[in-house]
Image 1 (spheres, rainbow, N blue to C red):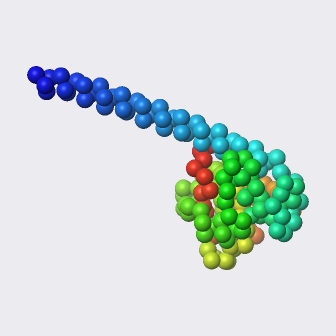
Image 2 (cartoon, one colour; image 1 turned 180 degrees about the vertical axis):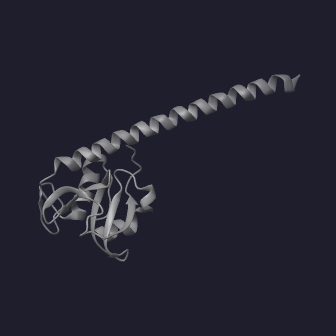
Image 3 (spheres, rainbow, N blue to C red; image 1 turned 30 degrees about the vertical axis):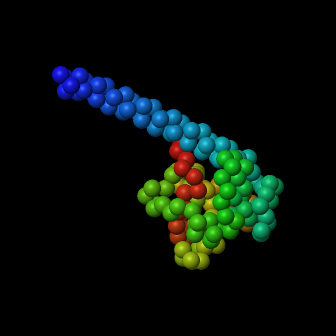
Length: 156
């Protein structure tokens, strides 16, 4: 008798747990999408801002000052100040797993990083460099990408 009642109850509980987990995953994806929208909106709002070495915004930036500012201002995420510190501290991802909002690092090697930009999809990034805050190709001839990192779990 116990097995007759127990099996249907376990089945109902398993189905309920499955749908609850699916709903939560959809909720998390929606929240991540909203966070990426805020990050992108903040970054785009500063297109054209002047480049100044050591500047952290809001009207002038160096490369890592820009990425630090964008994450802090948009989603209250604190990341380290310099490009090398950002690379050293953040969760590394492969080029194959690069997502919008991830950071792309450039330089001579992973131990000699001199530049960082934020990936926005379609092979492009927003970064602050000598022409100011611009959108450009990640794999332009003048950049040597040496690594990628995820500052926050964002979706698109």
